[in-house]
Amino acid sequence: MGDAAVPASGLTSGDRAPPVARIARLFASPAAVLVILPALVIAAGVTVMLLGRRATQDTAENMAKNQCVATAQAVRGDVESAVDQADPVFKMMSGLANSAMPTQDALSRLHDIVIGRPVTNASIVFPIGVMWQTFRDKEHPKETRVQETRVGDTQTTRTSFEIIDGDTKQMGDVEISDYDPRTRPYYIEAVKAKKRVWLPPRVFSSSGKTGVTVAEPVLTPTGEVAAVLVLDYDAAELSALLRQPPLAGARSVVFTRDGTILAYPSAQVPEAAI
Image (cartoon, rainbow, N blue to C red; front, side):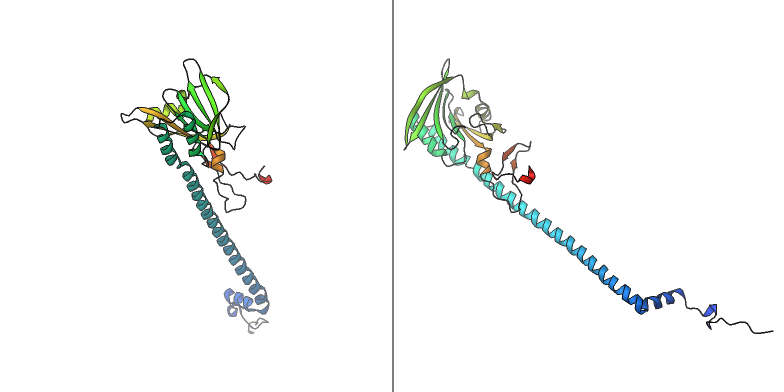
């Protein structure tokens, strides 16, 4: 009998290298190294770039949030500082309400109390139907004017005054109406609560602007209401207090819980947002 044939390669099927070894030799070849090494470098670079980009975005977002929070706190402090001025103003107005000062002198003093403050209207209403008031109207938004209102048996007379160099002089004719400040919400709520009250935002009839009103009663030693003090803050006055946000294109807005905007910066809205 003849010998069995030997494969041309000189190896039998039992002598062949296992698949793992063949793959290892394939990756170890010069051609494979030239392909695999650049691919690994590219993959590593892409991974590092994506991780770095994510970290940069997270850092930028955190910085932006922190800046917005800091700005909001600053705006809150400015607005609170403005409305907190009601304390010293009410204290001075209370002294004026308890004085026996003549009308013209009282109006001049009331004008001096509120001048330069973020207050649109200031009033002292007495239970007998007399009101001393400073105000700014649509025709004179930059000028603080004064007037006295007296409720009579059949009609109300309103007399306007002007203050020139500290002197109070009557202006023009007396206006006749049926207006009674004692029927207004600020008077009714302050008398009912017998303490300081903040009323819901409303549109002021004199200026036509949205704002908030705070009223406080002046009580006698026996607890009776001697007068009601009233201050109005409008959106334009509060908006002037809003600081420039640290982020380009950002805006700071002050609004109530029901969504009524109380303050908005006077900066022009960007064309892209129109």
